[in-house]
Amino acid sequence: MIDLEPLLLSFEVAALATCLASVLGVAIAGLLASPRVWGRELIDAAVTAPMVLPPTVLGYYLLVLLGRESAIGHAFEALTGTSIVFSRGGAVVAAMIGALPLISKAARAALESVDLRLVGAARTLGASRFRAFFTVSLPLCRRGILAGVMLGFARALGDFGVTLMVAGNIPGQTRTASLAIYDAVLSGRDGDATLLSLIMTAFSMTVLIGVGLLTRQRQDGF
Amino acid sequence: MPNQLAVRLGLQRGQTQPGFRLDVTLELGPGLNVLFGPSGSGKTTILSAIAGLLRPDSGRITLAGETLFDAEAGVDLAPNRRRVALVFQSLALFPHLDALGNVAYGLPGKSSRSERRERAHAWLTRMRAAHLARRYPSSFSGGEAQRVALARALASEPRALLLDEPFSALDHTMVRELSAELVEHVNSLALPVVLVTHDRTLARELGREVTLLRAGRVERVGPASEVLAERE
Image (tube, rainbow over all chains, first blue to last red; front, side, top):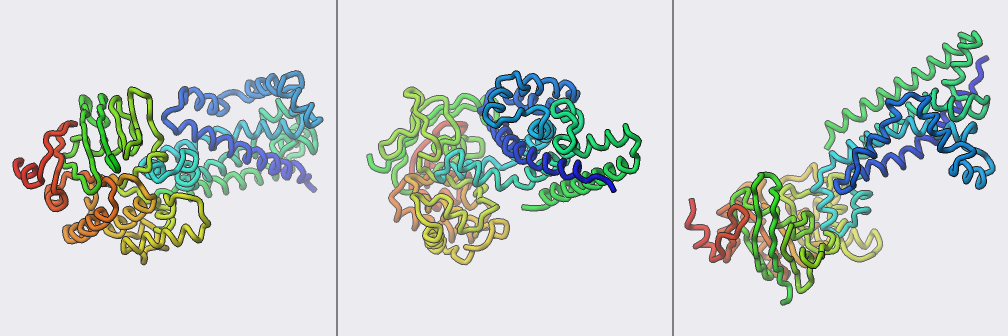
């Protein structure tokens, strides 16, 4: 019988990572979509970089930034008693970094497609910038953002390289499904590798079809 | 001066056409003020500047004695603090809210949800649109959307009301009906209402006095019959 723990761990880590990436991604997209923010393209590039940089480079940066000797790592450990790196927290951060660009890109595109006159109307009706964002812009791009969040979740679920660098391969702690597949192949358990791979593929395909349907409806709707 | 809207504004860069410059001074009193001009004469730009959605390069805008914008003094009140309602040419009704939600959006003051919906309903009734309360903008006809947009603007209890090419999507009988109603409401409100249009017939029907705009400047101000008669 195959060990399902890595799969459950993957979902747990990806769910947490996606929540964090959604809040952060939408906030960044909100900044990027407002014309007055200076250095928008630089921020956008920095958020997008994880899509093109080698996982080893990202992993290395995260180790330097969040490692036990770093200021952030030190503070985190003092507060919680555990380190970020080589723990479940590291796996969450690794998965979040992968999901973030997908979510922020989708959210930015969706926010930029909102009719500015609607936001203007909200402002003249007495809404602050914040209120207009939360009551007009966000509801109008919920489909686009949801599509990004779904893609981000699928991406977070499948992270391998950065997780390995930052979180290691600790059974029950950081050995997610993609790491378990790697282990299975190395130790000749082809059956396990096949099954896990098929489950991951089926899930990803389902998400992609869902995203496709979601974005197509958006074009037909309102 | 109570309820007087004084506008002096200059804009160097064109919004749509390069080389466009805006330089106007307007004294807009309570009641209906009609700004007439061809498209590209700067009408929409003026309204956006008054509402605070666009920042002019120079000038000063005061409403009922309060400074909304003053380039020299560095005053630029946020749109939500101006209490100037703008009805866009596109109406800009919120597609994700029903008519009641749209009208309730701008109601001033804090009150319970049910009370807000009640007040919003009263505004819809006043605009003869109560039957639309639970319907969404995508299902409105042109006239219905116009009524809801006007109800939403008035419900925010503005100190000035700006109308950008109202009725432009309506047939002529509907325009007559709605503009007659509008005049009725405006007369009961005692606040400056600024209506911009490039529709000569509408301008003639509504305005006793008309301001003629051309290429970003006030060409003349006078009785509608004179200002509108002499061109084209």
